[in-house]
Length: 287
Image (cartoon, rainbow, N blue to C red; front, side, top):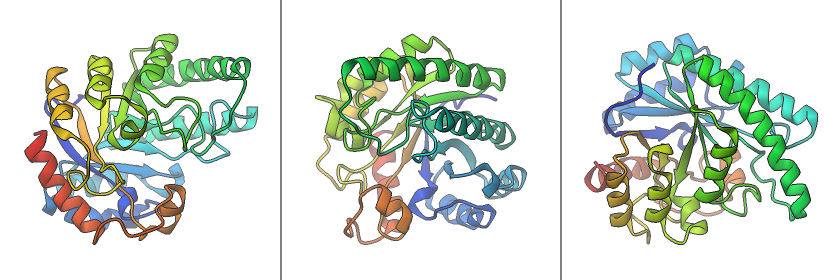
């Protein structure tokens, strides 16, 4: 597996479907026509796809699988009950196995916890949870290393997790895990809520930035929002970021994801517009 030598632009399948299955590969032709280089597959369960088939369809469309997006519900949690930890580990390792067949370099997302788990725990509890996640991530990263893959860990906003909200916290986790397979995944939507300055967070991540989500401040079209994109572009250039930039926006069309991401109203005229206009803006601004 070789990482990309230049910035590529991708689209997360959650914008168009949930769950992603073999049938969903019919989207690939359109993604290619719009000008995307990569697809970020949101694989909710490994049994939903035949990775060999999906790889064939990607090849046919002239696209790469740049990343696999982990979906972590309450029963998948590396800081949860022993059962939730075991479920999460089995699921994430299963995704890594599929990534080898998909020729995909990066497993991305908030791999440390169930999304939506936000509790005000005591500092001693938080430290215990931290140790549990470090132990589990060491094991997961060792597995990723053995398969030649990387894990890009995403800080989420305070409404979606109480565990890792900022680049600083994520960097502390990377340091404690101590694996070359563990990188950072930053997202403009989450950073817009949690970081004092998005550009500073990007520069702090530096060479450890393995993946990047570009979303509007309201989860809509990047560029059709209030985010100051010029410093973000400059920071990515300064750290010589050459990984994937992926649009991960959501609409009301995919009901299960709309509920999970709290999309209660129509943010943009259509999801096609998010993809097409967003890509055009990102290529002009970051490319």
